[in-house]
Each structure stands twice: as C-alpha cells, then as structure tokens.
Length: 406
Image 1 (cartoon, helix red, strand yellow):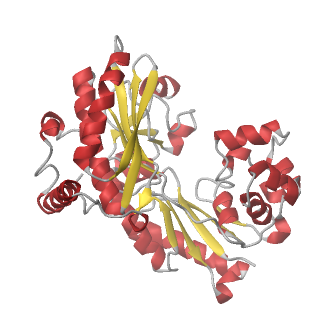
Image 2 (cartoon, rainbow, N blue to C red; image 1 turned 60 degrees about the vertical axis):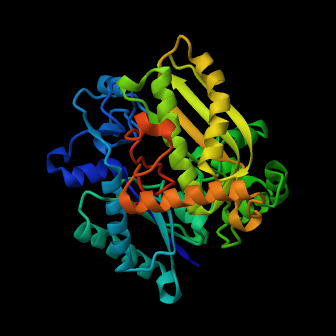
C-alpha cells in the first residue's frame, strides 16, 4: 500500500537562479556564498554537474573542470521566498504533511490517493502546478512508496525531473542500484560500521536478518530499518535538535585574527537569538576555524545551561585566545560557531538568581527590538565592527525564519 509522496527539488539554488535569470538557462551555473576564488560551490546546475562540478567544489577547481561555468552569488532570502511559493503550489494538489528542508517535503496519501495510478496522477499535477505557479526551471524528483523512508530514497533513483513508484512487490531489488551513502541516515560513521561487518552494498544490507541489523545499529533502530526496507510503514524515531550553529566564509578583508574574531562574535549573537527563538538551552559551544592552507581546528567549552548572549560571549572570550594562537601563521578562511548538548525549554527550570533572570530578560528584549527594527538595532559592543558581516545563509536542513533579523 502506498502511503507517502516525497518531493525533492533538483539542484534547487542553481535552478532558482536559472528561473530568475533566463540568460543562465541551459548553461553551467555554480552558486557561491561570495565571489572569491577560494570559496566553493554550494549548488551546481545539472549542466555544471555534467562536467564534474558538485556541491563543495572549489571555485578554482570548478573553473578547471568547466571553463564555461558562470558563478552567481547566493540570494538566500530569495530562495526562501521561492520555497514558500513551491509549498503553495504543491498544496493546490495535496496537503503538505512535513517540510524536511529548503528543497524537500512530503505528503501523506489517503484513500484512493494510495492507488498507483491516482498517486502518479497527483505527482504529475504537482509538477505542473510548480511549473505554472513558480517556474518551469524548478524541476523536481518525486517518489511514491509504502513509507516515508523509501519515498525519500526513491527520489535518488531518477534525477532530474524523475517520477518513481516503489511498491512492496518491487523490493528489495529496486534499491540495489543505490550506494549505501544514498540511504538517509547512513553517514560516514555508520558506513564504516557496516563495512566492518562486510556490508558493502545496499543488496547486502537488504539481505541482513532483523537480528543482524539490531546488532549493527545496537538499538531498536535496527529493527525499524529492517521493516522500512521491506516496505512496512512503522514508527519513526522522534527527532530532537542536537545543535544550532552558523558558519561563514570570510571575505578577503576579514581574513585576519581580528576579522575572524569579529565575525565569530556576530555568528554567536545570531546563534543565541535562534536558540531562544526555537526554545532551547545550550550546554556546550564549539568554535571552528579553517585556514587557507587547509588546516582546521576547533575548541569546545562546557557551559552552564544557558541561552543568554552575554554568558555565551564570556565563554567565547575564554577560548578564543587559544584558538587565535593556533592560527599563527595561517590565514583564516572559514569560521563557525556551534551550540550543542541542547535541552528544550520544557526540561529546564528558569534561572534561579535575580542577576541571571535580568540578563535573560535583557537578551529577550534585544530580540524583540531587533525583530521590529532590523538586525543590529541593538547589539553587544564587541560586535560593533562586525555587525554588518555574515548575512543570512541557508543550510539545506535549516530554512531561515525571515521574521527574525538576519
């Protein structure tokens, strides 16, 4: 029985630029966070992918692989607006059950919608609706399957502009052409764990018994995977946000110790505001730096449960000198701040001491002012020289809230 329709927009950022700039259509395009030879592509059009350019390819390497490539600086806010237009276009045909990222969503099929012919008809209507309401360049791969896991996997089978139906009678053979890393949830560590058990293909994975999967995953998740791969629509583990963070490629004029420090302060202030907006408290903070010579390093500080910007800035101040010392004689290229070991508001008691309560109230008041009057209407003094740096960026799994200051 088919239960889920999953949609994956193909090369979304690059396709968005081809839609918005007709001169780019049919040409190799690389979307970059800023115009600099030392940065990398965050998206590539299919014309560029045909030459070997992909997400993460450095600009200099992309030029070597594809001399005709055109680079476009990313426009995150525009992509978010288009994302919402896509959602509205889909909902002309089916309600959206969940949004998984800037370029992925799924719909739940009910009643006659679960019949293969009707499900395919709905998928075709969705593609037509996106083309009509948003633009013909925004192609998508759609997969229809007995559970969400297989529907997401199915979008990898035909790209671009694919339409795939996976029925239980097709399993597991229809999955055998995929690689293990094509399966959502198999990252580098799990991949190595599977290889250590002699599982080097999806075919071998599907041949494992339920007990073998339990042993490899070392949790009930192994049983869930066993059933997913056989087309059962079973319980999915609840998700819990593990981290909140930002990273930024430094423009040439900021590639100094002081420039890196200023941008990190700006990123930390943004992360702290998101922390409060999403209703979490952090217990650890990690500062990361990557240099032009490909060296990279990070420092982690333990925190009392906090969502207070000033407390986070104090912790940053205690670990930055050690990070700065490791920069010598390198040139910083990319910096990142990550807040992790998160706890939700419901699990945290309010601050006990009056001083801590007042500082948190101050941070919340600053959030309200900045939301109403724009980013950096009020800000910590240590952010003065960097308050206009690090504009909105999009991670594929995180859709920025445009009601918050950038």
